[in-house]
Image (cartoon, rainbow, N blue to C red; front, side, top):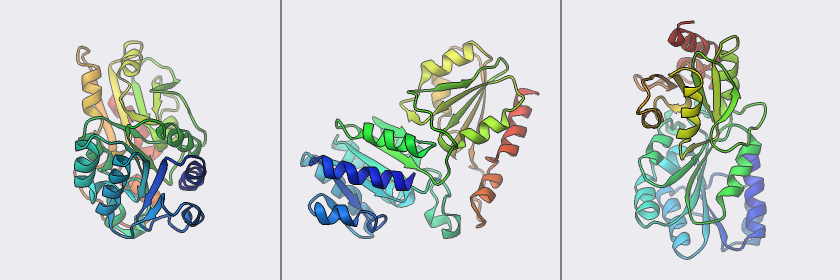
Length: 294
């Protein structure tokens, strides 16, 4: 996804004089050619992440469409006050793009992990949040984010599904009667394996804000009011959206995602962290079966 994002960004900057890119050293080498051709619109502020965000907002105030990019803990957690004040409070738009997801760089330690990024962005009104599960989805979502003046967070990951799914809102990939399982972004393939042999509906989304309440309601009303929400960041981040969508429908919900009860301090690889958080296919399968009583 990262390579697809960088290649697409370079083409956008070459083609559109109203687009600017702001970097904080991360990916600066890959965009060096674009920086030489457009030194006034490809800006590397160095390891100054709050300045990264503020510079992007300043470019937006000047009439440009900024793409602001670095790792999620530096972009969202370290720069959150600037996102809140310089983008949201001033009501200017831009495209914030992170790569690294919750724990894509596990050997770098906790400093490079950000399972709370989506929840933080979601605390601000008016943001579109994309969580692609395939490089082609990332490319399309980036291209769709450039026109206009909306505020967009595009969360890229080293984990990906085998195939893209380019629908809008929830895409129904499997229909069943005993429950609805919602998979967001790069957890889809694991969710499909986990649901093998189960009579469940599987919904997929690469855009989680705005939340497709109508799509979830439709699936629940034609299946069962038992919902399993699987997100590749803090467990339960979208639980309130499910509750609002089904406010008049008695329902049960199980939220799977990065654990909230403990801080996982292991290193290892991505698969080790998936296992620790119950986000591997085997753990998800056991959790879903237990919840549905299968």
